[in-house]
Length: 392
Image (cartoon, rainbow, N blue to C red):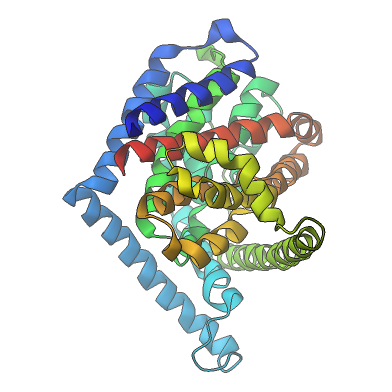
């Protein structure tokens, strides 16, 4: 039964993507089939094998140590601010982003990350049937972030047609940046964070290949990465401030969104006797069902999924962590994978603003297809969750 529901879920996701396709005759089915198989194999490897267990534990240990180092800096500045035994979200989860951002900057400065991103991107382009630039951008998005990634392709932005620009933006919305991976791992199990990062990479290409298929001519498929020369300490200062800005912005959004959700929940409970999240749960329950979540938990899971879409993944992860003990391990795993992406309404503005700051005309183009972008990125999250449901 589990497999039948999973197959139904895949058909629904592909059908919804097909309905939104701008070039149905141009869809390349072979690369899509190959990437689905790769997603299944990688999910099984990471979640169901000793080798995967070692990989996940290794990555989790690395980020655990990084968070310890980050907390040394946080404690030095904010030590004594919290009462003993308390763990303020901003201090323990968000501020460590600053240190992770610094490490990314160092790896960028010494050309380690650009080398990794370029060659993994080239390898991916052989599998996904898309351009080298699109493949590089997807890998870069998963490392440097959804807004910062466009700086690395700044020279190419003005030359890209809308269809290629859509794929670049879809990759940015479907993945997460390495700077906040550690923050996610404090709220949901690391194995689901790592698995989602890997399979979302391919999921973004699968959905984009259906919604937005095209062929890139060889003469246009040239990858030139923008590199800005900085001294080491200029780079450190920039990445420290960038990390702090991310932490403060996420914190500000959480204050606003959590307070707004509490107010809306209170209003709905007074008027309808049900919370807003509970009502959203009913709306999203069919999606939760095709994702393989047990029928008794689809309303609860649907509410968390909807919360992520209308607010952001942090708010949804906090909701999940609060009730995870009342849900089955399978539901927790599927919903966790669904939550690990930037697919929400606020990301439309973030991505459009990032592109517009580099190229105004292209930024306006992104704003015009913003809802279509969110539609595709949400399908990527649903697809990843369905793939994981086959394994759990």
